[in-house]
Length: 298
Image (tube, rainbow, N blue to C red; front, side, top):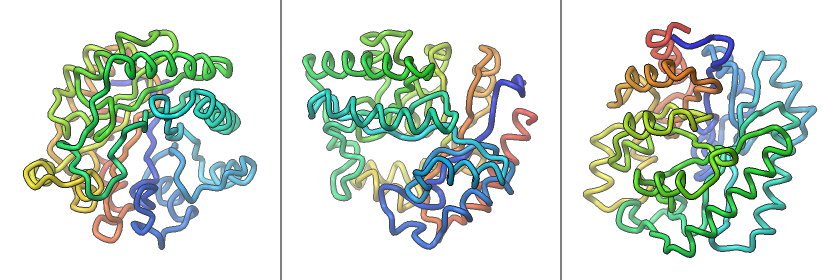
């Protein structure tokens, strides 16, 4: 289905240790996390809060397990802080990822974000940008994209629940306002479906600009509860709104088909933040890997 030399399979550490809620998985070590990833059949990972920042130490631990770093999340604050602050932090982040061999930098605008607020309703509390803020965001991302290009890397923008770029309309606007040679898209199945968007339509429209993929599944019953009871994004995570592909309500076959038919190259990265005390990370990693193997044959 995919060119096996061009597509790699990875998984995010957020199932083992949660960056936004450190009490989730606090007992799980970095070594356990990457060992179980490798044992489940994955060859790549993004970077979690327990990963060593010393590249020599990190490389040694990963190489022992035949693992690579696919990318890592970067929070930009282009709409709420001076550009220079974000640029400085971005360059440091970019250089770390470049040293680790990553080809993309995951960026999400966190100015006005409510994703990390425990009491703010994720649907009702979402911020909507004005035209001036859109212009600031687009221009800032173009500049960051140029900084990524200096290292032959790509900036992939992560649309995300509770942030200023969540809906199809917002993704359309961002793609229209940014330079397609500098700003690319991270396609996240779970965040789109959670938001009520048509994930297949979004992927089909922007597939040639998609340079990184998060395979995230949802449990619709929990998402509906979050919406009806006006719960926050974090409370939704604790309740189990997200899960791995093959365990939730998203049909990934049409998504895989569009990616394969358009010769997608890069990482397919399982990402599903759950409470590891409820959803054993290794068990769910194995479940995801088996499902992906069944669907794409690798």
